[in-house]
Image: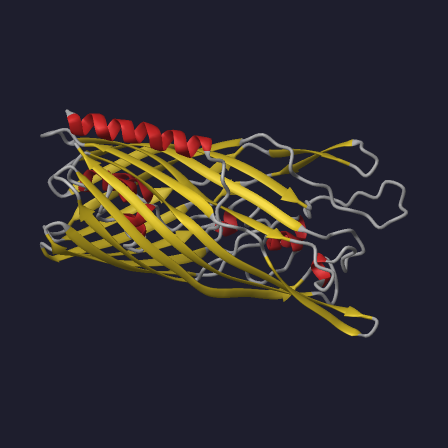
Length: 426
């Protein structure tokens, strides 16, 4: 009973932290590859067999039926990104060029997973509350960088560029063990987004009397936007050591995003965006060659091309992203009875064909290669703690801007993550 009370108290605290902390985060594109130290240090590979409650709820709702215990896990990451913007533009004395670093600062992500598996029951229940993704870019004005100069190459006032996006998802889940080998799972998802964008490059510039230069409005006055979808999946155990898994997450359909803006003369304007998060198909395999070792691999298809905004063509005001594959590899070894070591690797396709549009400057970049490491320490029979580190290797996107002839842009990024998790078994 004491273990249950501790777990429930910790879960309540974690929920409060998530809901009271409206922080934007840097992510791999829009979606984070995993949550907490135990899950992310395995490369986020958990579709076939998870190592904690957060991972059990992340990609495949059926995976909670393979966790093998009731558990509350709470964790997250502190993220330290580096973003750089280079731009070139023709000028009276030749090409002008500059390089500017985004003052994004450090961000916090939070994850909560609760799994309840009654003794001798084929039904397992779960609840996840996760920072699903998001991003922050904060480029200051820079007279030496054409895109960030006071009057940009489009003839409009541009100056500083900033955007913030936070995505949080609730995922109540149920899994049922149909046979000794097969588990199926299903559950709805409820998502919430907080967003601000300045300048709003997706809108027409303000220039009411045609005297120029115009200025883009700010999409910064809004309320939270709600959306939802569903998830389904299965896990099949070919042998006692080998598991196969499949998880499907539907598109997350959001209400129209509306921002209260103003013109240069102070007249009210309403800006709108149609946004949906992409469908995700996840396949996984997990193999336990010995009791102390677990090897897992996931392959994911993230369908950005068929989502609103991200897949909308640039000529229609969207970002023009393509759909991508993501590969995750993870290994975990129980060094001693009280300590385990995990290693992982993640590869992402880059959904951004080229920078293409000013709007893509306000979107987080894709980290194509990420390496992860972590350790889990058993503190008591019921409590364990995991710590980890992940590094997203440098990556870049290059391209001309559709809005202006002769303007070239290069975006570069790398990211460091310190990850943590506490697990409570009951």
